[in-house]
Image (cartoon, rainbow, N blue to C red; front, side, top):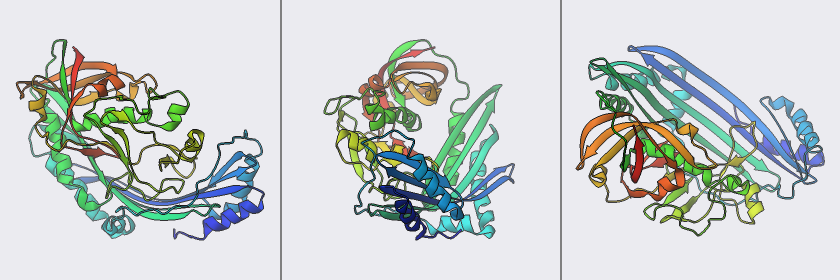
Length: 445
């Protein structure tokens, strides 16, 4: 479907004629191709093209909203949005952002676009997935794979409002993932890996396969350990999961609703002084990179936590008005059918420049390579209790794999206990972290 760049302005004009004070159109067109292989053969292909748009209006201080996938229904969409505003509660903080300049990060790859658009390129997509499978199966102890998948997508986003914002951009993305199952002497272990980026050249399909295989193989022969209190080394892939929980605390919406432990803590030391937490929507090639957020506010780099001290929260236009500050460009939508909420662009823990030997920094303790149940962590209280697997380290050397251990605590206490960060920053989706040494923590058997 060809994008009509004039459509949003026509929709806004009609909405204003229907008596609304302000109007905003969010329009998105997306294409996607995903292939899965199994046993050196194509297992599944998914191809899709989607289009949709939404209209958000403010009328007498009240919010109205409607959406559709059919451009021919624009009059009904206007009527529905304007009509729904009659029945919502009046809210003095409702507003739309003013226009501002914005930069354009590197987020579009014509090679990915070509794979998505051209049916004859399907074989190229399959070859990428086969590379994942081939590299994962090099060791005879890898008995089977699950979801050896390569996915490619392209999108075009338009955001216009009645205050003069007229932003638009094209973006691409590609991902690779696989689950490897290793078996030896009656023992079975799984390992997973994922890579995602805007550019095809930033994905190593071979490395995804070999890393998943390595993660499964290194846990073969794992045994239980005794309960102990010791430092732990959190592998970067697991540290990302912890940061994902911490990210919820940095949302201004959660803070304003009293659902964040960071309420009233601006300017205070909240975690280890060794840690800086950055949100940066302009990083080249990252999946969370965008020129503007989902309200048309320019994206940028924000240091939310500097040397352990809370510097700020993530805001969209609505929450920013509540606190009498400016939006930080962190308005996000789950799709065209939803109104903006608050979330990160590319959120990450800044890596240390010199700490490359984290097992040496750990000394003696548990190197955690897998965590199970992070979704059960309480984002309001910050409490967590998760099952972990990993490798026991003594004197900086790996001794044996460990299974069925449990660590528990509070997310703020966990981040306060960070002793070192590595130089191995890795992003999984739009969240990134290096490896972290934390301690001491209670490890239950």
